[in-house]
Image (cartoon, rainbow, N blue to C red; front, side):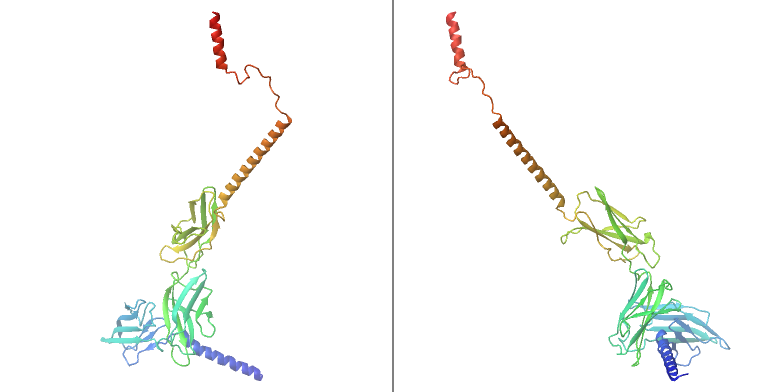
Length: 396
């Protein structure tokens, strides 16, 4: 083999050794072994939350109880006590980063034996990853983020691992976020994730031990719901109907698991005058109808989805506009119509009057023959009638 080939082989072997050395240290939490000689020789595997002890042979060991005391999220202690006829006790996932006390009560050759272990998170206080948060979003991706501990060593590096609740390793983070120091993780394949997962964020440094962080998550509860899709508005002369499609989710959810809020607002709504949001219960048909006679003002509608069993809500959907763009447009049309009709009528009357005057000028009125007696304004018809009556009486 040539010299360059030998050099490449040595580099490959060195890289593999480093990966195995540091990778194995970061993948699994250190086991706890009793520091003093005892009849039980109890050990604790934090990766599977399992207590084991010596049994068999010429020694008769009977374990009456195994107890684990850890700390819940609210800071209160939690005591888990189980019995096992075997040579081990396996607990449900424990919260280890705050410390755990483990107790074993047994009899060895009919003599009572009590063993107590304390699992401690080794490292400088404040060196662990802080504000670890994991969410499932877009129905197919899980993203975990954290910040570097304020007392972490300068060369710290963090690693995320996911196990199921039986202690089986599911995956190490396939895609880390961050430039030099890992500050997040992205998983694009969630097919292997069960309902509950155990997540650990460990740290490594050449300068000393780094504390770890662990948490058990319900994958359904950490899912961020996506907004409803295909939001449309269809209107007739008197009503409008808003329809939408059920959002896609990673966990299995039916239409009965959802509730919705519909927000319909007018254009340029003044502060404090917004319309109340409408809550829609879970129904197979995602539809909301409301009265909206024509002409209707410009409005905007948006919809968000919620989980009926929790306070989880999605973001609002993109707003969909409907109605007239300008609230004054219908009145303007009526005004223009009235003005136009008025002008046309005025113009028509003017033309008719002008034509009548021209006809009068072309064809003047012919004067009538006047009666000299009846047409004389100086003769009063009543006086003339009295004179005639007086003359008639004289003749008689």
